[in-house]
Length: 194
Image (cartoon, rainbow, N blue to C red; front, side, top):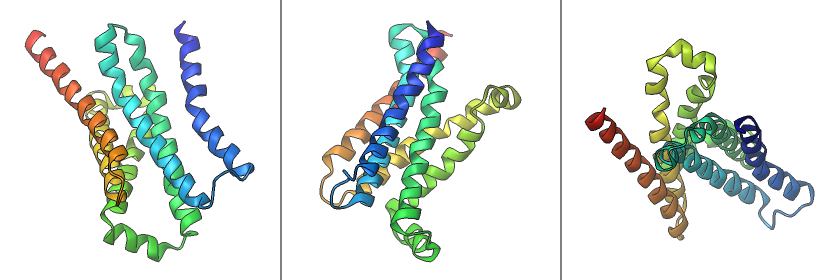
């Protein structure tokens, strides 16, 4: 059963990418295509962050370990959509003109924190294989706790970007905080009961 579930999660995770490709090729991105791609990829990065963080709580709630087997795939899709998001900004929006990009990173806090989140994703993507888990041992778990910081940075990036509409970004922030709080609760239970 599990051998069919993993490929299914992978295929489902590619759907947002296929949707944006469809919109690009059929010219259905609206009056501001670059903005549409940027927001679309950014939001899906946050969705995959929430999905990745929800795997351990789901394992706890359902008493099924199958959930954690999807974590690596979902985590890699976080990196994939975050990279598409960044490439849209760097390549389509600024056409690889590095000086204004660097100025944005330094002067605009939402760009700075978004870029910082992407940088922190790189070591997680590089060390996601089973071979790296064995190689790093206990340090692997410590390194991958960076996902908590990345999730907070990602949600703050969205909040600070939104100048007028705060409701949607705040929903993501609340979901992330709840998922992180749930993990703290799980860890405290593990300490108290072994």
